[in-house]
Image (cartoon, rainbow, N blue to C red; front, side, top):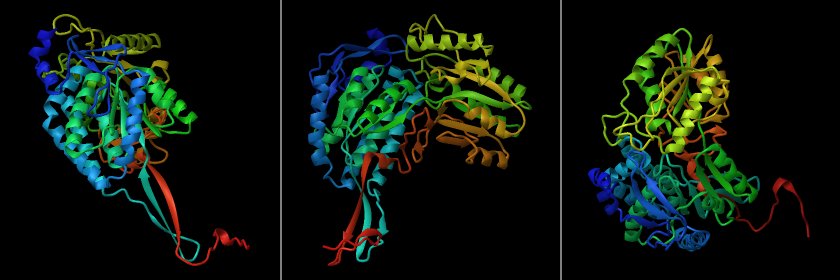
Length: 518
């Protein structure tokens, strides 16, 4: 096992980030607590090796991190926003420096291709760059008052502690999507990473520490608590954490949302997707094929924006179907660090079991398998996490199609008539994250983007469902949770809005012309 780590250069990367065989699971930035909780072994789905282990944080550790965060917030909120932005700018530079080793570690711990691992770190760099500019644009509004001699304006203030619960599929980017914005807004952050990918979290904390130390950032601005669902529960129920940002399954999000809502806190939920591409008769196959195939098999189908459904017009159905079957036959499955491979492993054997169950359920409901799935074994597949991307002819109303399976299973379905019929099929699932249409017909594309069109938070034309632009607000509707991260005005959720009215006269006129004489 140690030999494998050495061969892949992982041991050197771990040393670069001060990661030991056994690590503590709670930190306030520079200080690491001597945690004594249950040991979490991070097992790579690439080859089944234990990368490193972490001692989980306890409730006592969580409490200590929160108290330090509260203390740090009192100072951090007084730093001018552009000065906080300068710290984030330096973090981007440090991430550029560590892009290769961090990207490789992401790939090895999570199982996504090396290009996707590097791309995830690039996302972190991009959101930091975005946040730097934003640090000078946290604008409010000036408004006219109905009362003479009065002026009104609104402003935004730091919120406090932001709790971040992230998922394994994007083990570092989701954290930075939140922290880059929260930090320039003057908030402090406490991060509970997925227990399936804790090592990359430690690496991020070490990178951040270098930048924060150089700038005298208060201890506690970047908190980390590694543990299971019990840590997430503590965070969701904690009145000292005004905002909880949670990324993961709909089931998890409903639990977090209910707990945060019960105390009237704010939650930012980015949950499941069940994303579809509509392919119309005028679609350009040169675009359809790479968009659909990458969307379905990239990250081994473990993106919230992965393409789950293809809704194809009957006139081009057979053409699209045969082209996809041919493309699937050319996919190379294997070690994601080998850039000749298209598809890496699922995260663990539990994910493999869900993948197999989904295929059985699809067949039981009448689905026709046109690209055979299955688990791979033998040399290079020792982890037991490598599966074949599968394609199933199905109907949208199948129970399994209504459910998001985090695996490379693509459901192919046919529509007839107008594009409105395809849109109706697309929207008829509980989730509403990402959607796309492939068409060269202006009317069809505009119909898809209209109020009568896609009900998703993301609606694309002639690009796939997978992948997020940093400048746009990312998130979805319905069971996706309604939260928005990243671009546009997503920063506002990390701040509290305040309306101010100033009377610069010697009298006190009341609103709505009310008279109150004493």
